[in-house]
Image 1 (cartoon, rainbow, N blue to C red):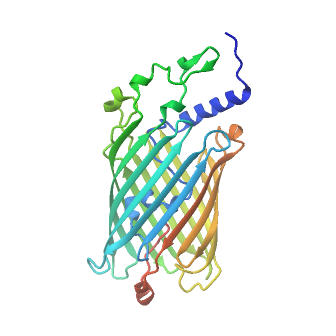
Image 2 (cartoon, one colour):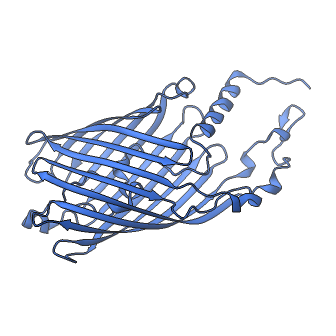
Image 3 (cartoon, rainbow, N blue to C red):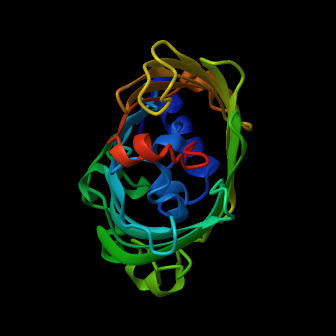
Length: 351
């Protein structure tokens, strides 16, 4: 039997294999975003309601690896709000909901997840410049893929692929669903009018739900716990200019991620109320051993619009020509009139 495979096909197969092996099992990792400060409920349940507004609504879209394969596309939306106020002095209870849908690869591997979260925010001290927050989150996930779009070695017959002839089919299911539980804690502090910061740690998938498309092994495969640590700060260098450094660490199964960087934030309008002032921002970050990240956007009237791009620096750089992921996000925080009257400010809303 004589057949030929062109270089482009070999390149695509190599890239697909690298994508599958560089981050561990494709069905055992949670989604991630470059603009992770736009998805606080995915980072740490304790960040639910950690802002000064009546409510916060956010949406983000990510498109990755379009230059080398079928694009990986992810969209996420969330809403959170402090619903029970003044439980003890200024303490409050906040609730939120997070949804995302991720579609990856030739087989349309789809992950739809819905999460509900609650967080209690305890203000410490008479000066109300410290907050300890504890959050819990529970959700439901369903993963599926299109088996007819996948190819197996034993389907290569007579010089071409014949989908549907693989002996793998009896052992594969095309859908799996499970429940997951997440938790987290954070501490926010504003030691001065010019500087505030937030620290947080979290644990996701603490129930380690079982998931596998190989039905006979489903009872043996559990989704790995994802541990996170976060740092974010706002340093008001001048009346209108601030530096906003941030760092994120995540670890799940055999995969880990470290992101560090800074956002340069310039107010263009009236700086009296920073939360609604018109401003421009530019961010530069680095995801260790993976990509250089760039973000830019605008803030106005409680709305933040952001765009980001990943420049690939990993082993996939040559195959992808440096192309990584593109994201666009929008966040709206509804202004709270009480904050303008009482001049209460959440110590740090970096996340």
